[in-house]
Each structure stands twice: as C-alpha cells, then as structure tokens.
Length: 121
Image (cartoon, rainbow, N blue to C red):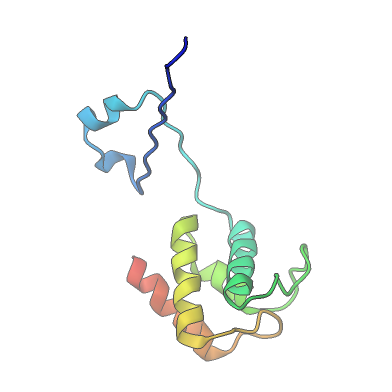
C-alpha cells in the first residue's frame, strides 16, 4: 500500500541471557552467530592489521606456515567476537604503528595482543 514503509530494528549483544525477556519479545527473529574459528580469526586479524597499516593482507590466503603475528594472535584470541578482534587489532596498531604481518612475530607485538585480550576478558 502507498505510504507504508518497512522498519527494521536490529540489536546485538555478547550474551543473549543478559537481555531481559520483555526486550527480547520486541524482536521477532533471533539470529545467533558462532564465534570465529582460529583460521577465520587469523584471516580477519591479517586483514585488519593490514588495513590499519594501509596495505592489503601480506600473506597469501591458505599459507599457514610460520608463526607470523596473525597466526600467534589467532591462537591468543579464542572466544572473541569479530568486534573484539577489531578492537584488539586497533589497539595493537595504535600502540605499535605498522606491524609486520610476515615473518616471526616480535615479542613486543605479541605483548600488545596479550594486553588487548586481557582488557576484553
């Protein structure tokens, strides 16, 4: 009908159990997203750190050799959401500036990741 519009209301939360029942009733559909796997976290971390440094992902997709920062950070960020990963990468980039995505991760970058993860827990 003319003049009618569709309104979409979306909300996000870390734990659905923390949302009150009356608020949950407002939403007709609930969509639960799983936490990213280690490989998904590695890819996201590599892309985000590359974006913060103004470059594309440094390692080709599918290359899982070595202990580059994305590999190390992916292991350290189990259980974090995509928004948490963005926060971790932002914190690392702001503390360290451009980071090396290839080669062995340096201890200072790993410590930055550890601090960022602890802050989120």
